[in-house]
Every structure is written in C-alpha cells, then in structure tokens.
Length: 341
Image (cartoon, rainbow, N blue to C red):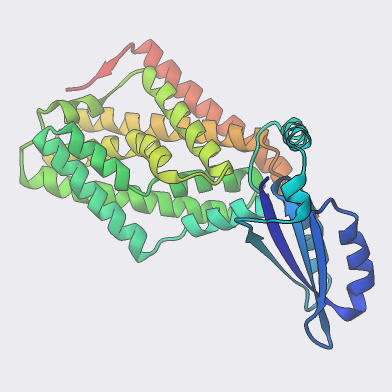
C-alpha cells in the first residue's frame, strides 16, 4: 500500500473548522499535537491516491490563512496491527478500486509541479552534463561508434525541460512554460556550439553512418518521437527513474542536434537542413505525446485564475502541436523520404 504523510501547521483560531474538514477525508491515521501557543500540528497518513484531493483543499486554505503551512512526506514503511492483519483480499479490492478511479495512475499534481520547477532551471550541473554529453556524442559521430553515441544519450539531461514544457502548457502556467522553453533552447544551443566547433576544425565524421543517418528524416521518425514523449510523460507521472526513459528522449534530440551543428561547422548546409527538420519533427512529436498524456491524466489546477488559464491553454497547446506535426508529416509524405547527403 502506497502511503504518504501530510503535516499541517494550523493557527489555533482556525483549528476547529480545518480540523473537522480534514477528518472527513479518508485516512489511515490522524494525529494532533500542540506545537506552540499559536499553532497546532496535524499529521495525516493517507494513501497516495488521496493525497491530491487533500492538498487541493489545503492550497485553498493557505491563500486566506496566515501562518498556515503544509508539508508532504513520503512514507517508506508503515506498520500497525491493522496493516499486519488486514486480509489480502481486501487489499486487492482497494487497489482495483483505485485503478478504476483514474484513467492513468500518477503522483499528486503538487509533487509533479515541484519536480517540473526543479528540472526547468538552468544551473551548473545541467550545463556541465549537456556539455559533456555533446562532446561524447560528437566524438561518437567522428569515430562512427554507436556505443559511444548511446553513452552520450544516457548522460544527456534533455528529458526534464521538454517534459516541463508540456506539463506547464497543460496547467496554463505561462511563467513556468517560458522558463522551460528557455532551458530547452539553452541545452540545444550548447550542443550546437560544441558540435559546430568540432565540425569546423575537422572533416572527420562527415561521412559516417552515425552522422548521415541524422541528416535525413522519414515519417517513421514521427512515431519515434511520439513513443519517446509518451514514455517520458508516463515515467514522469509515476515518478519513475528518468535515466532509462531519458535515453529515449535523448535519442530523438541529441544526435540530430549534433548532426545539425557539425553540418553548419563544416558548411554542409543541405545536410544541415535535413538535420534541422529531424530535430523539429522529433521535438514536436515528443510534445504532442506528452501534452496528450498529461491531459488524459486529469491534471488540473484548483485556483480560479489558474483554472481559467488552463482551460484555454490545454486545448490550444494540443491543437497547436498537432497542427505542426500534421504539417510536417504532410511535407514528409509529399516528399517521400528526404535524404540530403
């Protein structure tokens, strides 16, 4: 059973009404302790599936009550007489009931938003990892080594900002959306700078299969991008390790970006066009899958202003990305296979 602990610090003059409301929610355990003369601490142990409903209520209260604080704490283990002796049949029924309530199982919106904000920031760690992955990938192109290119995709932190773009567009959080877009462009720009320098100072790698494969695009690449974006979004919703799924997103973004930079550095502008088209196709396909998955998952804000923005932003983002992907697919179908060598 997945459980989480919610700690709420409530000012005493608001305690009775908030306490009664919190008791109404389904919970495993409920503790109350006096922290000071002014505030009381309430601890609520709840199933993960019930966390978001409680946090939504507490978020509304936080907007109007001074001195009100809430923390969410993951619970690794919880033992009691009830949990040790509960019948397995009843536990299975609870799990089936939870699955029926949501189309896609996911962490709470608040946890996901916290993760997105963390991964949409430009910092030294992000910059260094992008630089290192770009160098490794470019060397893989020069040596025509698939293993080296795969190694670069493992360390490339490209999944976070892209997923953040899709997530923030669903919520209508334009400030976070802009921040995520800037971080994504920043990462791609670093990859381009590194690969342009390699392409300018050496002719090695311009005829390798690793390079040439990323200077042409087919309709199949749209399916690769959609699958990568869907896998990344599902892993994000369930707070799974992003390392393996991040490789899928990096497959669609890192090598084409390296090929684009090398083409510019070497003056191969026809190849650069093919690589650029592949980058655009992959990015848009990833975003289309991610915004669709997030929309299906039922992620919604609770504040009235945020709900109003999300109701506009959510359909617009899906339609906008879909139209671009459809236009790109039409270009590919009309041109058959674009193979610019």
